[in-house]
Image 1 (tube, rainbow, N blue to C red):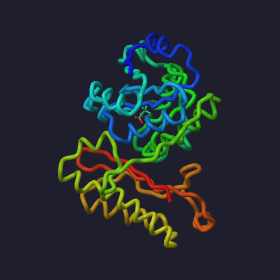
Image 2 (cartoon, protein in one colour):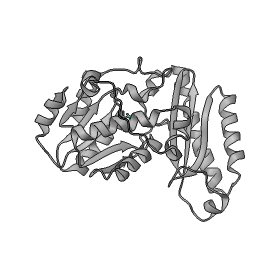
Image 3 (cartoon, rainbow, N blue to C red):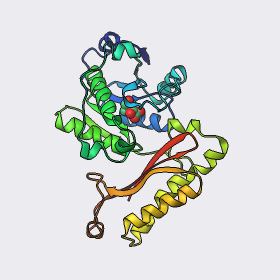
Length: 280
Ligand code: PAF
């Protein structure tokens, strides 16, 4: 496996490969990322490239950009073991040699709700860096985790509307035995917070079960679920069931008609903000 830090080295290493499979990451990797790399290896048919870049543009002023763990050496060992061929790990000056004035702004209807409501500008930052990484790597296939469900939808929309010749593949969320979705930010949790953290996936499962059992008053169900998280010491941003197609709230009639749904949640436990989702 090769590790390159500049765009010139990356282009030289790929020398025009047209079947590259790509997994963009911010590093601090866990098994969930490695599963995406394995998926990329199966889907691409060419070299597997992973990028490691903590993208300042997608962090708000009070978020964890500075403390986000930079663990390049360990990440590269893990990537090699998972079958990655090439790691692109640029520094900020390489990817943003001048202030990034041109940005990719996704539509508000999809990007200013849920995560976008609580992290203003987040999806513009994500789309801008992903568009740039796509230009650098020029992959045929790119794999994004379903754990960041809304991000996956925003990227799919960007690829469709800009007619990018890239197949976007969604990788399943990996979970710890107790149900906690694997995430780089789980490392911020103290021992007692780690024990409590399972309550988030449990709340999503309870919401999904209630809907499957026929409950239709979603606002009441969601309010109750958020309240019980609050009672356990969480500060939830949202916990809600939405249509998979556009992340808008379903009507009871749509649920009865079998509309595919997804339950999504974001909540803070101590200083850590966790997100999770469950397709219903
Ligand atoms: O999901 C992530 O890790 C990031 O949002 C991404 C896609 C690598 C862009 O910085």
